[in-house]
Length: 631
Image (cartoon, rainbow, N blue to C red):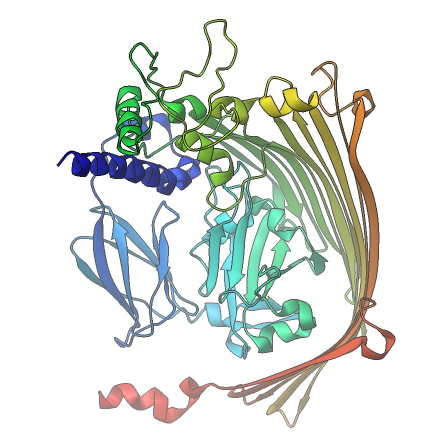
C-alpha cells in the first residue's frame, strides 16, 4: 500500500512538469492589442461550433476562410464546405472566398450555415501576376488576392503574416519564433521541402527580396499570392513554394492626406498552470528517495523556500506602435511617404524588440508613353534574446523544472545556485534568463526603379532595377555572475553578417487581337541577379571585468574561436508567357522560364521550368445561365 502511494506521488510530479511544458507557448500567445482589464475579466468557456459555407445556390464552397472577428483564430472549409471552431458565445464569424463578398455572421447556436453572394464587381478588378497584371476573371492559375482594406490592420499588427492571417485560402500563417518581433512562418499549400525553407518567394514592387516579410503592413496596397504551378512558374525554381507579390502604396489623386496610426498594447501570461509548492516538492523528493533506498534530500531543519519561478521570470509587457504616412497625387504624379516605430517588450523577462522603418514610393507619368516609379525602404531593428524558436523550451525548460523549494537569492542578495533534481552542475533559472546578454541588430535598405515605355501601340518595354543591403550584428556575453562565466572568466562573442543583392530585369509585352475573337498577350524577358554575402565572427574569454560586455573582445585573456566567409552567386534567367483568350470564354496560359545559376557547373547551369493551364468560363454559356429556370 505504501509503495502505491509513493508511486502516485511520483506521477503527480511528472504530470505537473508535463503541464508546465505544454503551457510554455502561452506566454506570448495573448493578443498584443489586449489591455490590462482583459486579463482580469471573466472569460466564458469556448464552445465547439460546426457550420457550412454555401453559395447563393446552396452549393458547398470548399476552401473558404472562416475567421473569428477580432482574433487570429481561423480555419478553412473542407471539400464539403464544412468547418468547426471553438468560439465564445455571441462571437462573430467573418467568411471570405475568392469571387464572393465577405460576409459576417453571429454565432447563436451549435451549428450555422453561412451563404455567400457572388462579387461580380471584383471579377473585373485587375490583379498583379508575375511580370504583369490581368483581370481577375481571366485568371487561369490559382491566385489569392488580399487588399489593404481586408487586412487585419490596426492595434499592434507588426508583420505581413499577422496582416493576412486567415485572409488567403491555402495560405498558412504560423508562429515560428515566439520572441518579441519574432517572424511568422508563411507556407503556401503546405510544405514542399524536407531540409530547406518552405517560405515563399517575396516580390515587393517587382523586386525579389529576401526580407519581404518584414515590410510594414500599413504600407501595403494589395497582396497577390501565386499558389499553383501555372501562376508561379514564371519565377522558375524560386517559385516552388509559392510567390507573394506585394504592391506598396503610391498615393492617390486628390489633396494631401495625412494618416496616423497610434496604439498601445499589453501582453500578459494568460495561462498559469497549477504548480507544486516548495513543501509539496520536498515531500515528493523525500518519498521518492526513500522508495529507491536513498537518504531523504530534505532532512529535518533543511530550509525550504516557496518560489514561483514562473512568476519571477515573466512580466506584463507594453507594446508601443506609432506610425504616420503622407500621400498626395494628381493626374501625372503620386507620392507616398511613411514612418513607423514599434517597441515590444516580452512577457519573458530580458526580451524585447525595437524597430524604426521608413518608406518612400512615387510614380510619375512623363507623357502618354513613359511612366517611371521609384520605391525606397529602410529599417533598423534591435532585439534581445531572439534565439528561441518553436515552443520556446530553450529558455523555459529550466524555469518550468526549477525546484520551488530553492530560493532565488541568498541572504546577501546574490543568486542562489542549486543542483537540479536528477541533474548536475549549478543552476538558477532566473539568473540564466536575465544575466546573459544576447543582442541582435539589423540594418536593412532596399530600393528599385521601374520604367514603362510604350514603344509602339500595344508594345511596352519594362525595366526594373534595384538593390538590397542587409547587415546583422549579433553579440553574446556570459558574465562572471553565472557558473559558466566563473569557470571561464566570462565569455564574449560577436558575429557580423552582410548581404547585398542587385537585380536588373528587362521584358517586352505585346497585346493584339485576331479577328476580334482571339486575344493574345505575349511576354518575353531576361533577369540578371547577383548576390554577395560575407560573415565574420570572433570570441574570447578570461575578462577581468564584466563592464565591456562583447564590445571589447581584445580585453579577454584567451581567444575562444574566430572565422570568416564570403560567398557570391549570379543568376541569368530567361522567361516568357503567352495568354490566349477566345471570346472571353476559353482561356489558355503557357509559361516558360529557363533558370541559370553560377552555383552549378558550366554543363548543368540551366534548368527549364514550363507550365500550362486551360480554363473555360462555363457561366457565360446559355445552358448554364438557364439552369435557374429548371430548378
